Image (cartoon, rainbow, N blue to C red; front, side, top):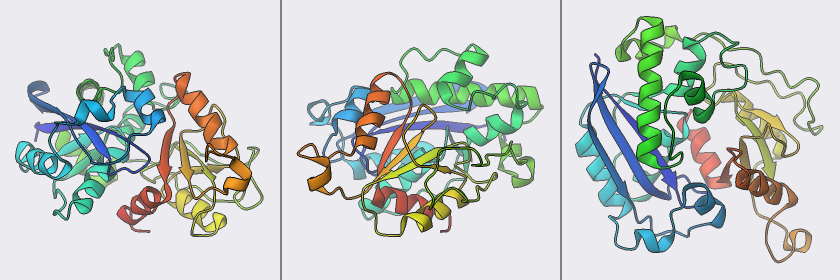
Length: 297
């Protein structure tokens, strides 16, 4: 099989179901042969930190197709073709969006291209991480409009083609779980962790390996359990937001502590880093729970 579809989505807020743009590119024989992109009206709130990332506002999607219509359009466009996305979040977003609309999930096979990258290239190539922008720079792939869904889907597809060429594989080979080896250790020793998460084991074969996760606010499950489950899907739990942070899970905030903004100091710092160009994904607790469920926890 040489045919696959590279897909990317953008979201309106901390819920992964709040898809506001979808981009998808069909590749066949290592060449793009078709593409599809649409804005989406998720009928949900647009948060400022999301808009700062992708530039999409509520008024931009006022007349765009609904979330349900978009999921069905994507289903028709994809058919039975294998889907590929850069990281685990796009797959989770499509799954959660379908569930939110009461629709059946897409049953296509799905390849996580971030895992492909860390298995196709030596450790020194990915020493600074596996973020899409970094890998595109390493490979000389254009990413002129990063966080435009079609641009990101195209770039991710080109990264996959490069990975196939250096490993003498085709897309179907990456559906074989035995192709994926453990990546370099993500031990938390020596890091800045709270007492509840500092001993958290990290699953190096987890779908989110390489993500550094921080929790803020009150979440339903005990913080220690949340950290353990995050570690089970590959995340490294940390106590504070730093330049290494890639994922912030926001629970309910105590307004007596955070003030009228409703934002903790961790969230404020994360948004400041996002404004400076750091890639940090902010999720609500429900989105984090759904992500765990998707991966069997």
